[in-house]
Amino acid sequence: MASLRIIARRFDQCLIIMVSMRAKASLALREVGVVVACLARFGGVSFCLQQAADTVKCAGPSMLPTLNRDGDILLLDKLTPRLWRLQPGEVVLATSMSNPRHTVCKRVVALEGDTVCVRPRVSSSDVEFHKIPRGHVWLEGDNKHDSHDSRYYGPVPYSMLQGRVVMRIWPLAQLKWMKKEVSSQRFRER
Image (cartoon, rainbow, N blue to C red; front, side, top):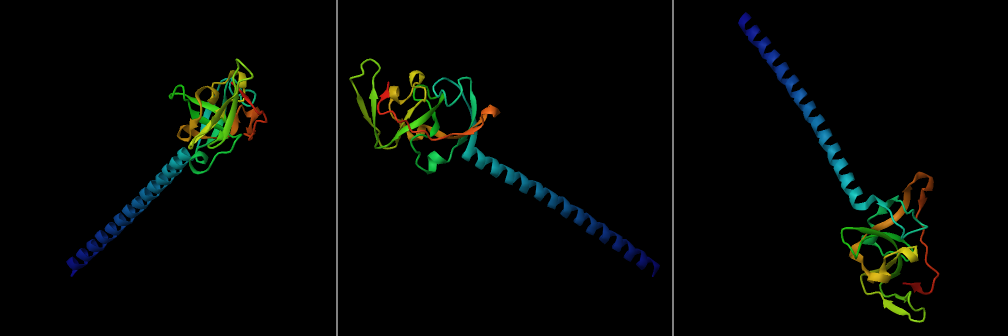
């Protein structure tokens, strides 16, 4: 009888140990599950942000006085050019037509179907008309005298657009939303 009690007690102890180990394993698995879920959420949010927005540094004289020559950090909306039609006056970042390894920051002047009048620098009496083909936009810098843009290389394919500039976020003292500014100039100088 005593041996049966000892066996029963040891069996109970083994059962308690097994239940305890199972509870610990279950708790550990639950903690691993929480960590995996957090990592998956972070990865998903990170992926979405990379597809939807970005920050870029834009430097150079072509967008003076809107942007600084020495460089501004801009918030870029990558979804708008993919999902909706851009509007004239919006500032965009595009792959350079002259050097595809570089990007340029320019303003949308005309959309597909529009006609742009360009007056060459040499003779003010000559005027060139450019009809923007389907799937293209006409881009120009705000600094007409120091900007290499569509006046030199023509319409830019929509596929070259990387995003729409939403706001300048640096320098902090010049933090501002990027406004749509449609040029009232009838002829564009080349």
